[in-house]
Image 1 (cartoon, helix red, strand yellow):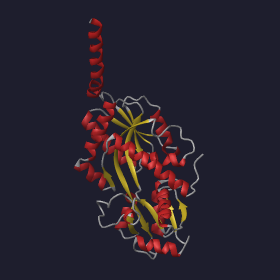
Image 2 (cartoon, rainbow, N blue to C red):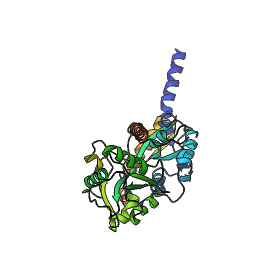
Image 3 (cartoon, helix red, strand yellow):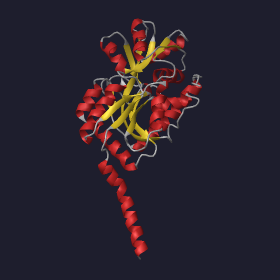
Image 4 (cartoon, one colour):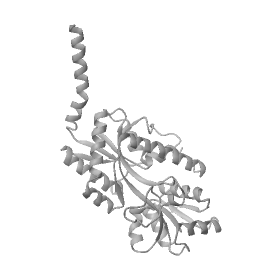
Length: 321
């Protein structure tokens, strides 16, 4: 009888340990890894969430930039960290594209991470130089079919989401355009503005100043629904059912984080993403804030990996060795 009482007491303590840990977490500073150099498009988004998390939890959330190797350096660092909830990474689109592009990643994208919540998306738009004789997506497709390989398109670099989205469009539309890679989105969009490039599929974040100044034409967005900021702009999915491509950001930690901490992060990110001031601040930068459950997030990433693996294979895009 005494043995049974002791066992039951032990089970009660164990079952209470998870919620108790969640109640006291966090009790010291959290490191938020951003796998890009300081000053990039990811930084203001990370800082917005870090500030709100600090307000909610009362501990500093310290941004640590760990750029390099297509974000794999930052990702590997977090994959190897202690899974106690104090080292988190702001994952980006590369989480879903790198498994398609890299022959040997130093981590397993699904098994080595805890998925907490997606935080927001940056819409991708199809833009053209005004000298290109098209004013709609249908006209672009018709012109490209009539003039194979006459048009060129700029991207932010080989293997970037802008490159893969263009290849996805080419395969969907059955057209041929010449790829001209640049070093970053700013250079790729500037090339369209100057006329060095005819077309690009880049983020609204980078393109919007030139769109508003009527220096480039915008034909469509690539997200699953029309943009909140440009509701009259059609999506590529309206022409090619199922077509979706966008840049995104989300919070991830090492595999093995306590479920209660995973849920605490997820709930807080969802709450912050829904705040009117956050939506307004990020919306001004072309970011549509929005959270997900952990399961929704991991399901999304698995679908992204499958989609971009197919695009890379069909486009004969070389893998990084």
